[in-house]
Length: 581
Ligand code: ADP
Ligand code: MG
Image 1 (tube, helix red, strand yellow):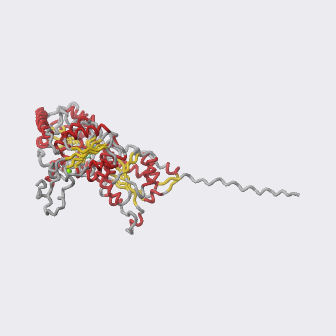
Image 2: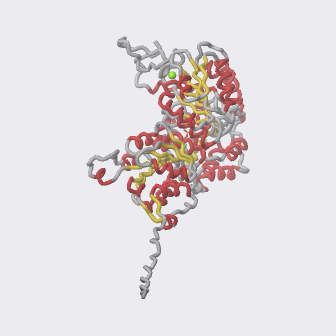
Image 3: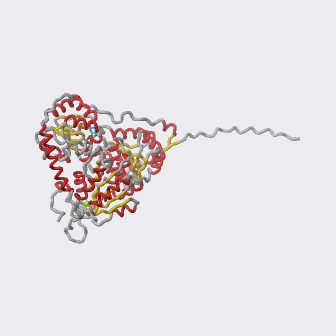
């Protein structure tokens, strides 16, 4: 007999446990950036942000990896300046953060929008000063040096923090923002579905700020009453991207304009109303000067010195605290430049200007004479090359390629290039700007090439190049259309300094006049040139720009070309040492 065993009751099939898909703080951060439109990030990875960079790249954010964080930061700042959206810099904790902070602070000083995102170590041992891996109280270090600084401790706060950082960077006076994301926050886990609910689009992150009608009327009355008015354009005006309105303002009034260094090209340098060669005349004789996105800071003698003591200023600026900063401003117009220039143009309609026609014709004839005289400096084909004979060739090539962005730093190399090379298009000149710092060259060249897709030529003093030279390799790795010209006179200012102790060491200003910088380019696969004559430089630079590939030109100058501090030798405490002896 067979017994049929009752079938054991089937073990009820438990539904498989449902773990919702989970994501980390790193993923939320990348997604939040992408959500607000960030498409590029500059940085240098390591603990604790490496995986974050991989995730961001995977989500379609272009990652440009550097050899030094300061250069990545300079790239982000330039990206911000050219696009009016925040450039993003990614750094590791402690030293990486500190290296990058230099650039974020420089961006703040220069009104460039950028966000430095740094990983930071676990809070508790930092707060108790117990010592931990890369432990530094980064938020508090950054606070005094940037426009805004925030720390994020929880992954659900990341989208809010990114939106706030974005707003802080681009609204009002643009600047650098620091976002501190702790290691636990980067690694924290959330349900994907919950995370997805956090993202939002910030509405109107850089709102228009309309100037008051009274301020506009006051400014326009003053401008209209001027016999010898001038318009001074700063890089705030270039940043605002209101090129046609600026052109209209100038051409419809016929008032001469003077561009600050990075505003060169906003109106063509050779425009009939350009007073670029009549700076002293503007300062000494103008009775009303309208500052448009320019600060009356040290670059303009803070409104004193040569300036006409009876002259009056109109200032168009977004920052009310800038007004009266160095000299009383008779007619402040506080607002965003687009709104302010629109309002001024509208209020000027139908107003008769009291401008003396002899003022403009005087500036034009003075400019004609000075320009012709200046060109004579560039003509001699001096060999070994001086800054001037080299710049004669650079000028020809760049003026034949006006859409190339010029990056420029150094002392004599900065001043002489600015004075020699005319610019014809807005935002095509990027230099060491308000702080007059060295060490922005490779970073800014990379940021400019990446943000604009255009070719870039960096004209660098040999000392200036030294601060960022290793990031020439980044230009090569990303195959960017950047040509770097190194003006090698073998030193800071020049290569003929004398060590007063005669102990055989180089003088403090001495570098390497025989260095072959072109070989440094060879190491990374660039096309390189070593040139000793203006004709060779002309050919090399023409070819390099046409190639749209990474190129490096060692421009061999005479060691005695260049003077102490370029144009600003007067800032030295005392000229006890004549480095030219
Ligand atoms: P420059 O060195 O060329 O004179 P600065 O950087 O010193 O230029 O000055 C730029 C000025 O422009 C700053 O005072 C800044 O507040 C202002 N600015 C920047 N962006 C705008 C804008 N969109 N609207 C109005 N003012 C602006
Ligand atoms: Mg030098």
